[in-house]
View 1: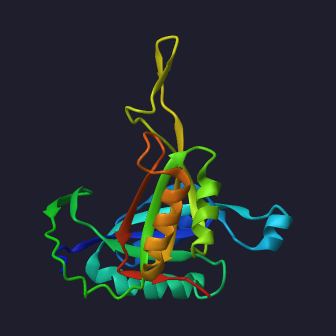
View 2 (view 1 turned 135 degrees about the vertical axis):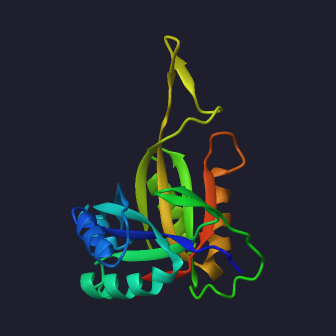
Length: 219
């Protein structure tokens, strides 16, 4: 069981809507949040044909008290109609430690018992060089993933840095974020590893975090 009172609450919505979600979250007691920008993907063949499969997205990250999770899921889903297709997705995950945001340092002890988690999903993150994010999405989709969000980033790993005129160049990266079913997580990880060999230097990094609750996953 997780002996921690804080969770990371993530909301993925269309461009321009994250600030509205944050405003409503503050009305529910959340102190604040951080907004990232990304590209959403949709596996629809028709959208690919029309070249409309890439959509600008905003990712809102909020640190919340775990006791607020249920209400946030319910109210945000109600207000922004996450029960309808393509309106948005939100999920919450446990934190093992937190410091800052006017909070005292909190460290959580994690035991093997995870019965308190009532979600059938996990959040998978894959960090690769820029331009490879779409390939990761294709590999994952072939193994069962239903969609993803690609977030631009910058890397500074020791194996990836190069120099030009004695200046260090930090390569651009892409973070592929996906909500995947627990029973499909292993197959998706195996497929990605087979395709890009994650053990090779600079190939990429994949990690998975548990999800307490998820909303907006319309079938």
